Length: 400
Image (cartoon, rainbow, N blue to C red; front, side, top):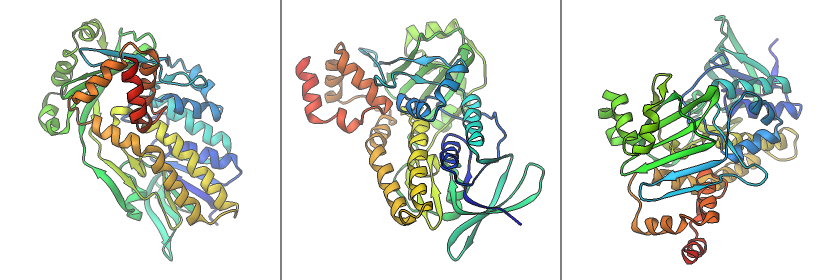
């Protein structure tokens, strides 16, 4: 006789494992599955902005991440060529960011879900979402040993990324879509110390960034407009290095470093999906995605997981109807990310700053409070809507 779970979470990375962990901590029966076996790598920006770090702290996992030797990042630096803005991305409570390898972070999260009481099955491939009377009621799949297995649950949670199998099965409404805007590739370098900085270099229709990660390595990612994706893909390394050469001082540092891995990269679409329906939910990239240029994905996944787990707790406990709490989940998610979504999509075009923005950037440079706020806005610590509000812009320009 098969066991009935409260929730089956499909996908065990940065959205799925925290969702399963938080539900299990509330005493619910949770099955967490992933086709990968952990530790496992995935294409990722790696960056966990300070509000994401704050979530790890709330969950009691921050000390575990720090113990892995991942260096903290206390400064975000933005080099526009003619001017540079350097500030603190966090808050007094959560002042730093981290850039962990996904082999480390995802394994840490999976283990935390298992410790909380979730049943974790790695190497499990979902083949079908089961429906009865229009409701999602379970899954059919295969274990790593090839056994065909059916499991049932009150709710199916899709946390399986942009190409979500769950989303394909439930066909959610899409809205506020934008095409792929940027293509980027990254690799890891040794001998490139960063001294606790996340460095961004913004040039005309090009950009790159560097940040310290595990094992004394530095992740360096470089990108160009999506219109050049197919052509530049023919020589990834050559175009990557040409982009780096646009900042000669950094290029000199890179020349003294050693590349330690192959290039990895992607171009991603920008979209919102309706994140719930009859007994199904989407969290993380499965429900909403934007370009990686602002590296918000991990933080978004963490915050989605908290919203989803809190909503399901109200539904499972009988306090509120599923439809009501999930409607609030969608509204809260969209309200939290909309301004950053628009800002990110604009930034991802790699168009040069407008004259108005150039004037604002010049006014920000040298004003430490304004530079800190600029860094916090790019980190998602404060909303772009608040930073670019007329009264804030006027205050910055007046101070200059």
